[in-house]
Image (spheres, helix red, strand yellow):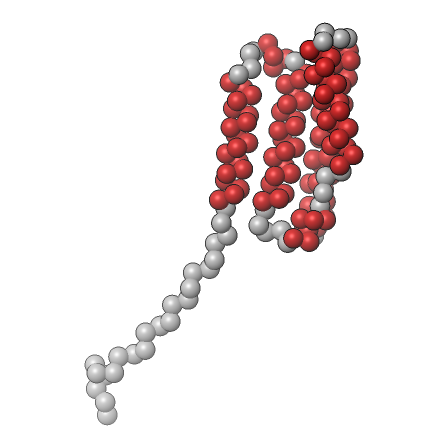
Length: 141
């Protein structure tokens, strides 16, 4: 009978640790978003925050963040990423409204025109973002 000390038990095989998905690009994108919002807050006077243009800028940054998150999410397959898209025409309309609001403010046109254009821009960006989020929820189920 062989001695137990001379024949040690086989060492248990270690399982490789599960792969952790890199979150580097998500963190970089979140940092860039925070930087953009910080710049808006730092270089904007207190009175400007009551301006409709500030709402347009924040809404545009929010939509850009949502679309960037969609591109950088690793847990979505390429098929889902390609299927879920923001309506281009709605984003273009929001951009047209935003430019109209800026021109109305810069050239001191009607205040009502600026308000309507800013509201139209924010609504277009909000509807576009809601469309993307709804499509993502549908794809997940």
